[in-house]
Length: 312
Ligand code: C5P
Image (tube, rainbow, N blue to C red):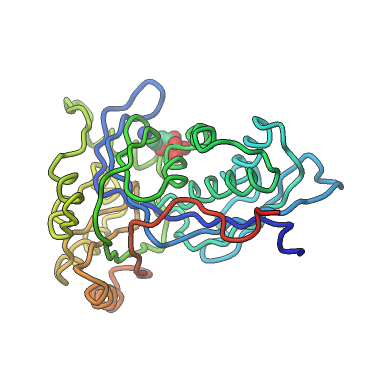
């Protein structure tokens, strides 16, 4: 029964099928219009009781997996902040340890930190029997970061405002993705700043998601979805990391239905025709040397879910 002492939650990475960014706001944020799509790269967070002792008021954390060394182990860690927030608001706080298993690239523009925060919310809610509703968890998620609510929700969804106002999208079919990692990270605020610099003085339209993409998703039309992939942050990410241009070119040479920088990058995602094409494309990208590492994923997949423990 010792396994029941901990709760393990799995949360997915996201790609943005489109990402339109408005002008900078006085809040330091930008209004967005985006379509989030959860893909099958996952982080897992296990929350266990830490018991009384020197850490009685704390949440401690450990991290394993690729890029683990770059993940902070203090309150800069979004999963720790999530645990402290839900502990505080629910009044159910108890000392806990979080163990994070990374499967989502660190600082890759795929919302790995946000996935950890969403997983920590669900895990601590179950561990402490806090009993928060889905709506309450989504509210806490929005306080933690712009991509955290979507990591709870999963699937395919339109995001507006800061990215936290979500509407599930009607989407048919399963999509095969090839994920090209750059081997270095990009800072999200730096990419937004670069975008503002590149667009300084321009009058920008209100961000909105094109209806053509929503229709293509409704039809399950991968060819059209591929052709409509777009990201306002891409020129900024490419400006900071010019090698991304070549990665995008290689994907297109090998017949990707579309390719786009994911979120603030530097990960580039390509939509393949099917699983076999995704394999061919990933081999070609690896052989070209245009990506530090290549992975395959499919989507949409569900948001943060308990995979072990949490029932007693
Ligand atoms: O919300 P989150 O902490 O994930 O955002 C990280 C950074 O990304 C923000 O500090 C801001 O610089 C930028 N951002 C933005 N507009 C958004 C979302 C994020 O400018 N809607």
